[in-house]
Length: 284
Length: 344
Image 1: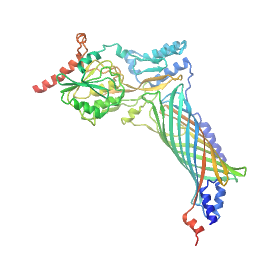
Image 2: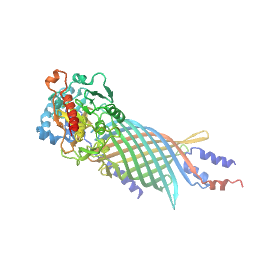
Image 3: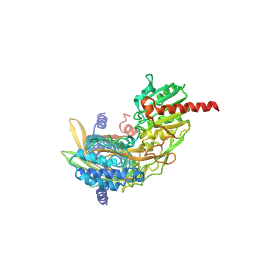
Image 4: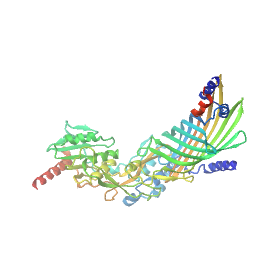
């Protein structure tokens, strides 16, 4: 019973180092899946240009929220890792007193195959599906105040995870790089108004995007720091996110450079099948 | 192997960085002049027509104003020089806005008879007129409805428009006066026009620029006027126009001209058929210019105005006697329509 309580306590705690915890449980119960979730808030610096609205860069700051679900699962004979990453940001940018607001929401689904290199380093290579939408809103413009953004892409994604000991705890440094390779995006023609599109004149507003006309990438660097307070432990995550989007389609040049510093907490969930749990801890 | 892949990804990302060429103009008098000239050069949509109408050559304009901009002593002077340069386009939709004001080209209106007096209009509206969504309306003598819509800058509720038409249901015909209506929302113009047709009608074309070249345009796409979901008025309508009818009001006249029960009466409209779009200069000044040309149903550009079906000016005799020649002519036309109908 005491052991059972310990297991329940472990499941409810925010566990800093998932491998250690995994071994602790797997002595008795087979863990089906480990899910690491984190929610992050932060502030950002932005630099946006969209020549549909203005030929000049608008710079300023904003807020950033992201939520990541990273899970470890076995598919066939291979160990795979899957990531669902939700990102959203809002910005307030200016150019010589003119104001431009930005709001972007995006989600990506990634699958990785891990490669262990030594005891501490793990490299992950995989593919990603990206979906992103939002708008830039220029308060100075009359008939063309908005540049809507909508795109989906298939991206190459890679990750490096490095685990290292600090003060008897395992800290985890992680770097992730996503590069969109091919996709489609909403792209109005050079002088096409949204009013005209509203009349149904929408031929040519969807363009094929690839690295030559849409050279973009996203870098994410994070550091997971385990914190222990009395009998509880949790993990703090500090991140730097550089979302660097660029496009040059239909003579409209656009960039949205977004550098965010975020912090949040990591929660690790061990998913165990009910029958396995009952098998191990049945009172009969 | 994996290290190589990783290095390749990093290298690719570095190479791809900065692939989108961005133009950087210096925030100086010269830099702002250059930027403004280029924005207009790439985005303005009526160079071809302006060349035909009054021989405009935008490269000549550069040569003319570039030395002047170089010698500006302060920002206010630069604003005047840039405003003068934009005035060469002779387009009321081209404006430069800054803390020193907004540059305007008004000659499309000021060089012609005013053909409207709100003092004379009072003699017709009286004191019992109603207002809905900015439309002043009443029933004139001889049972003819009169509605004045001076600006399309606000929205137009279909319900309110329907109520106005129901309130005028006992009248024989309707005079819609859009004189001095400088425009506003094109959707308001369409909402109003849609109350006067029970069929979907082809009323014009719209284009947009597809690139920075002076002749980079999309194929003209048809514009249709669809019947309103509210009350439809199919009795005779006379639309009164003068040179102050501009932009969205010009668009309204273009739509109404295609309707069989509608007559356009008055002076040629002011024009302004290019839907404007905006941009900014390095110093933050805002520039608005015509970017998307609209053509009438016959494919003619209406940038320099739409001719009425019946040209009527307010005579000086009527002006001095408080009579509006245009309203009187419109009343006569509606009454004659019924006389002819009864005669048949």
